[in-house]
Each structure stands twice: as structure tokens, then as C-alpha cells.
Length: 336
Length: 293
Image (cartoon, rainbow over all chains, first blue to last red; front, side, top):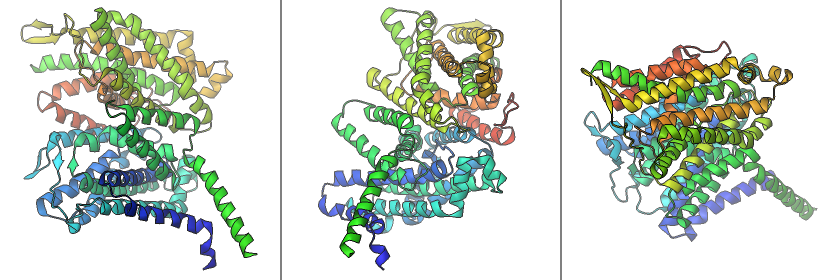
């Protein structure tokens, strides 16, 4: 038991505890909504990180998977009344299938082909969403977008009048993906992916089935992103093809992970929290200026790629390690 | 529009696609970077050309004299001050993903900067020849597209001659083949990169200028073209200059002819998914290099 009372354990536990308590002190639904979105973006960035960070395969079309999860679950919900809780699994699986469809022809190849294919696929998918108004007798809304039916307080259908449950749901999703990333980072597959990222030829020479490992990473990443899409659909309740499947969504996910630090467990989370808060603040402060917050995003990304390619995590890691050491030292002193 | 007209108009548009894709494939061939800001540069040139026409009454084709050097300079400085530091830091990495991300960040920054400054309006330079067409019996050829096509071909020809015949062109090709050896042969690789990026950007700018008399510009117009340019360069073979031109003509043709039989949007979808299938079957493209990619 004693081992668990070290800063390595109680600091993360403390952080989770603080995150759990936040809704007790904030009553404004608007701020809670923003906080839920912050956690949600951190979740999406972490999901992207599985293929984009750990495996080093740049996907620039993750909006497709968000859209797949959101549309599949919402259509099933609106038409046959299937609860989005089940929709999460189905939406995630459909997204994973799409991930395999894009990944299979391209992940065998090197370099930029995967990035290019994801852009092409996402663009095609977006055009389909805009131009499809019906699938069979199910209306999808086409370019006008799709309104998710509102039931009021219906926990069994992932709908709540209060923002608090949405906040906690986003927190749970985030904790799941962080836990998964933590496991992946130390798993055999994780080592394969790191090897592929660092030197694909060497990985291949060591007998790693590189295209298979990359494909698994792509499918896992797409699955989690799709699950995120289901959550998004129930939180926003309005699906607009350009916003959800377009380049803005796809780029944003990538940028959060890059600025935070791709290929690390917590980097995308830090990036997600940092950039989303900046984005929201510029939106509030400079309401009238169209495009300002995305302009800032672009500039921040450029600056990070040039000056801090490892991301924000690099800046956070050192003080954190210092803090752990300091707390450790104090405990030892107190014990003696 | 008859099938023959649509074939001709498709080829005309394809020439412009080819010009745009040539810039992209040049940058890739020499620097091994996919320039995601390529579409944003095209958009900048369109907007600049529009405002020069609007304010000074300058014909878009005349504005080439001002805008092309400006775009070259923009590309040159972009490589010198943003991409170069990233490439230097990633020297040992075989596939410089950092630089790719950088261009994606630049694209977003540029697009939204233009949005902030010029707004989201759809702009087109309605010149005297904008709506004109040449009619030969049932055949109808759009005049601005014809001008755009001819200009694109002339530029492509000049560019190709530059690449094949001049000393600088030789240095650029050498750098593309093996940057280490090129460096040993006394080529200033960093400068070649800057020039290549400048020329690539200028080519994107030229494509933008010839489009503005018949195509609406807005801050995110680059996204429409860059996705097509990606498909074209893969079709033609990444890094192949003449492949880009041929690929452009093919995509322009498919787009235009298929539109006779289905809605334009389904044509776009057809192209995107045919692209994925093509990647599966022949990833090196029609004129792909011998090098692995």
C-alpha cells in the first residue's frame, strides 16, 4: 500500500479529483458546456494520436470518423429509436471500418500517400454527406444538416437538460482514452508502432508486420474518434456536414495533438485543453472578427512546429518532474 | 452542352489543374514535402488579382507581371524562414512530417488572415471576355478558359525548358535526386529549396490568376483545388512534372465529361474514390519515378 502514496500516484489522482469537483463550483451551463468541449477536444486529439502520434502516420481526415459516429448513431436513434449508448459501439465500429477502407490501400505505402488519401477520402465523404438527403426512407438532411431529435431529460438516450452529465461523460471518455494510450504506450503493439515511426525499414527488418500494425492503429484511432462523434451528436444535437466532416474539424484535431506533443500519452490532452481555451477566449473577446481564432491556431501551430516540435508537453514535463521530486523529498524527510 | 464541347472545356480546365499540380509536384520532387499551403497560395493570388482589377482596372493577365514575382518572393521567404529551420532540425528523418504539418498550419493561418482582411465574399473579375464564348456550329468554347489553357501551356513549356536546359534547373533536378550528393557537388541545397518553393508558389499563383476571370474566389477556394491537385500529382506520379500536366488534363476531362451523365457532385465523389482505387493498384502513378514512394 505504501508505494501508492507517492506523488507519482497521488498527483494524477488529485488532478482527476479536481476535474470531478469542477461542476460543484460552476453553475453556468455556458461555461460547463465549454469545459465539456475542452475535454471532448482533448479526447479527439488523443484518439488521433494513436495513429498520428504513436504510429507516426499523418491522418488529415479524421473528421470522417467523427461524422460517421455522429450520423450512424443519430440516424439509428431518430429512425428506429436505438439508444445512442448502443450507437456508440455501432458508430465506433463503422468509423473503424472506414479507417480500414482508407488505410488498407495506403498504409502499405510510405510517406505522404496516407496523408493524401485521408484528405481525398474525407473530401469525398463530405461531398456525399452534403448531397445525400435520404438513405432509403431515412432523411439525413443533406447540406442543411441533421437535427437530432430532442427528448428532454432521457438518460437512457444520452440526453440531459443539465450540462453536468455531459461534462462527466466527456471526462469519462477522456479518462478511457488516456488509460488506453497509457496501456498502448507500454504494450507490444505500442512498441511496434514506435519502431515504425522511428525507422520503418528497421522495424520491417526486425520482422514486424508494419502494414498490419499501422492498420490496427488506424482502426483503433478511427473507432475512438467515431465514439467521440456519437457524444458530439448528443451534445450539439445538430450535424452539419461542413462543420463535422470538413477540413476545419480534421485540421483542428491534428493541431491540438501537435501543439500538445504527438506520440506522448498526455501531450494531446494538454494541447486540447490549451488550444481550445485559447480558441474560446478569442471567440469571446473578438466576437466580430471572422476567422481570428483559426488564424491564431494556424500561427500557434507554425510557431510550435518551428520552435517546440515536441510540443507543450516538453514545457510541462520538467516542472512536473521537479514537483514530484520535491514532494518525494519532503515525504522522505518527514518519514525520517 | 454537347459531349464534344464538354470534352474541350474539360481539357481547357485540365490545363489549369496541371499548372497548379506542377508547382506542387515540383516542391515535392525536390524537397520531399507535400505543400498543404499550395491551395492557400493559389487563393492569395486570386484575391490579389481580383483587387488589382477592381481598384486599378488592371486586366488579370497583366497583373501577372506584378503578382507572379510577388508570389515567388512569398514562397521563397516562406521556405527560408519557416520550412528551412524545421528541415534543418529534421535532417536525419527520412520523411519530414514536421514540414508537412507546418504547411498545413500555414494554410489555415493564410486562409483565415484573408478572411479577416477581405471577408468571405465570393469575388470574380468580370472582364470583357469573362462571359464570351466561341461558337462553331453546335460547339461552344469558353473564351476565358481558352486563355487560361493557352497561358498554362505556355508557362508549363517555359518552366520545363528552364528545368531541363538551365544550370539552375539542372541543380534543382540534382537536388531532387539526391540532396547529399548535390551538396557534395557544390550545390547550395538550401538556396535551391528556396528557389524551388518560390517557383512552385509562383506556379500556384499563375493558376490562380488565370482562374479569376471565370471562377469565384473566396478564402477557402484553395481547399477545392488543393484536393484535386493532390489527386493529380498522385495520378501523374509524385514528383513527375509532365505527369502533373497529363494528370491535370485527365482529371479535367473526367470531371467535365462525367458531368454530362451525372450531377457534378457525384462526379467529384467518383474522382475521389477512383483515386483511392488507383492508389491501391498503381501507387507510383502513371509517370512515377523509379524511387520508392
